[in-house]
Length: 312
Image (cartoon, rainbow, N blue to C red; front, side):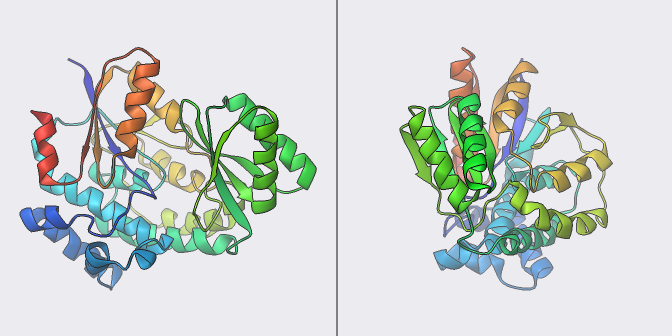
């Protein structure tokens, strides 16, 4: 029998109404919402349920909301799922994974990701940075386009998310991102899209946020996880508490190596992938990457009680 990996989504998976049906059906999920409200000192539960959307989309709110929804799923439905042999989370989702694995307390995590969201937002003034998705190009071509743009503008632009085959996100100064997109087009790239984000996440421009978060993370208590975590910044399986902490510090300006993460899990014999939390992005990436490699896997997304029917 194949192994199981639990996956946890990152920013962009939020939506008004997230977690409502789960909270209505499951007392354990409601308890997580109450714990989040108490830890943060404001009604995150109300913002998740009713919005407004523009407020929920603020990074300092989005990050704790997604973490909270993921842990609602874990605590309400986790004992009905096959236990994980590995876990991984996309950017912010790495915190959700660590809470699910017992390596970090939920209260510490939800407060920390709110501060992480604030720090990432203030690191670069609005309008100075940008992010863009590039589809259908090789990693080498994207990296070459970024290098060309940096040389031409004297500004920063780098690959920020290696999400899957032919799906790479770049980030940096807005001027340099625009120049990189022009370089991509000159290399034959046709599918590009500027992303509606307010900061250039996972780029060297996030180093002020890293400096702010490092002492906060140093003050948290980390425990050994129930199974290894495949971290973002190295795409390696980690179980040592200090290595888990270090990965969270380095991931802030570091690229999200999601394609390499999934490759490692597939190489380790994982055949069942369960995404816990809002959205279905990660399950979709698993299916595409497994198909490219000629592998058969089961990839599910669980955000509500109704989703459990997929396990039948």
